[in-house]
Image 1 (cartoon, each protein chain N blue to C red):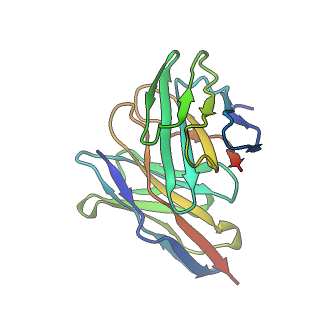
Image 2 (cartoon, rainbow over the protein chains, first blue to last red; image 1 turned 60 degrees about the vertical axis):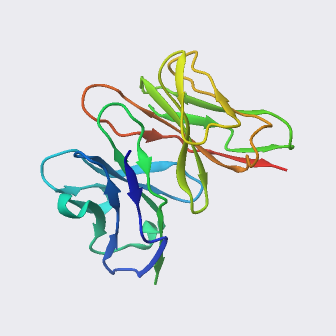
Length: 113
Length: 114
């Protein structure tokens, strides 16, 4: 069965600084990978997804993520963080077929001036 | 507007009472899902359904029940058997068309049981 690890529970960055959120997955075949963002008390919004092809994927709000098969990772990056990026971020993995996504426990991002 | 609606946004119940959370989607998605979210726990799957009148247990189904009588609707009942029902509940849906499709989420219902 697939699983997802987000090693960082909480990260604080300064506004304008770069950001990298880590995600490691466990799955035997090529996974389908997703990053979602959640503002407090809200549902989840898809930032980006990787199915196949180019390992660097672009998403909304200036985010990108890189799939590295050798490291079983799908880290999320943003070159310059804005205060509005403060939220919780979830990495998720899907197996082939119609199985539900499996989510990591999330990383809470705080942005300071 | 296409999307997923969950109602109500906040729900309060006394211990020992069953309560039903509503989830409706107009995206024509085949699959629907219920997740529970607790601080530091991420999203845990309660139940999911891929077709009308059929559903499967997720990782934490005990104390919950669902029905799928219509494609658009997937209500979740939190029964009195659920030991710690206070949580944030998220409903999601997904197309099962060929290929892989992301899950769309509703805004959530925060349930407080005292």
